[in-house]
Length: 407
Ligand SMILES: [Zn+2]
Image 1 (cartoon, rainbow, N blue to C red):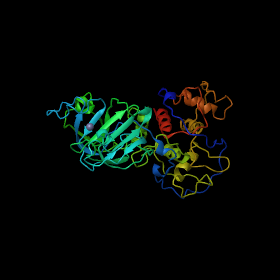
Image 2 (cartoon, rainbow, N blue to C red; image 1 turned 135 degrees about the vertical axis):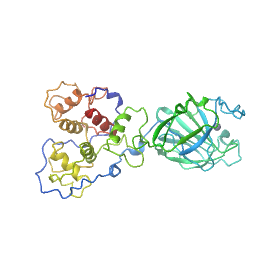
Image 3 (tube, rainbow, N blue to C red; image 1 turned 180 degrees about the vertical axis):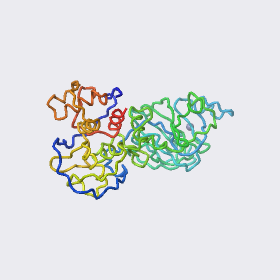
Image 4 (cartoon, rainbow, N blue to C red; image 1 turned 90 degrees about the horizontal axis):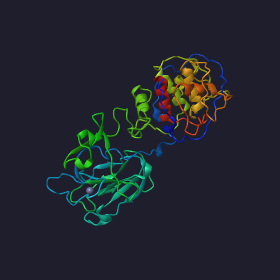
């Protein structure tokens, strides 16, 4: 088992849902009428918190290949940048009028100006029509000289959302996107790397071009972006360098999940019980059955996750609730996931050292499973000494737990 710290990586989780019963569900039924093992796409799952993903502004804000114009200190051979961008954190990207522009990261639209006419060079101090997006930590990405604007203030958007089209409004001689970052809004800030996928490979600009900073990138250097998702292993809403990046990439590489099909993973969405059944089932190689029907009243034979849920019960990983339900669209609690993983590992009997979680007393129903989880290095709980057994598990946390359990 790999021992790694988890507590600092945990995000605030959602509130409590059901408490799993320890009792077994109803009896075994007849042959499985749904032995296909058809793989349901995660897009069918609940997306409770999906719209709230906030990420840094660190992706190229378009799809295509366009040249860099002026930056501060740009070594332009014709002196065109000499009196332009005398401040840090700004870059011109020479995109033609009408080029679709996308948010460099997820966040909230905090500024929209769309009343500047072409030719009014003083409009908005020369910036023309523009959009500002607030990201984590007070950082704001700004997109200027726009032709059209596709968002409104207070919109909550994800990385890659179309924000408008490029243009020539404000003080612009040729069509271009003036992009910069501020922390907070109205205070200039150094801008970092920009990420993109090129032919399925993750790129970091300007580093991968051989330049240490944007200021060293020569005028006319082409920045190419084929989009935001690299071969299914990097998602819009999983920031490179995120503590969950490796776990999520592993989960995608193993074919356990493809994300939502729109390039996002739904990292902070909660995991439903049916999704967790599908993940464990796929992790085991998607055995096809047929498996006995445990007779859950809320899992009919044509339920898209019937095979995975039956497999979970057949193999002793999950039992459902004592009232005969499985509650497939309810969230998986942290204690339930501890139990699933403990059984996945063959249900070792312990005793295990008491990790001392303040909210898991020795007589807690899942005390042994949670102690095993900690002893195996899969969790360290939260910094405040709690494990929060009743909380819903997020998809990124589940990815991390699964990754560590298999490492
Ligand atoms: Zn500019």
